[in-house]
Image (tube, rainbow, N blue to C red):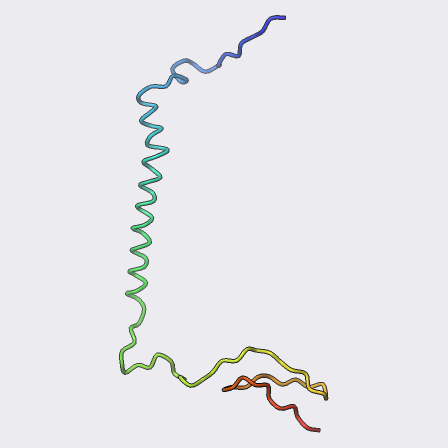
Amino acid sequence: MKSKSKKSRLPKELTTITTTSRIVALCLFFVLPILGFLVGIRYQKTLTELNYMTQPVAGPEVPLSPLPNVVACTEEAMICPDGSYVARISPACQFALCPKN
């Protein structure tokens, strides 16, 4: 049985490693990703600066919250003996009293 060596069907010019092919590989695998990373950082910095410029600035005369004494309670419900539901009420976030029938 004859053993056949697999030969490339491509011309030798396309399979030979040259100085030009090394430079192209260097650009594709090292230089372009680094440049893309640096451009991405600069783009994110620009977006962040634009975001800060478009947000309103609260001065001392503008309150940060229109209702500073409001307490937010979790939205839970309790079932009363008569089958009705009561929710939590501020400021202590306790369940409301069940209705008396």
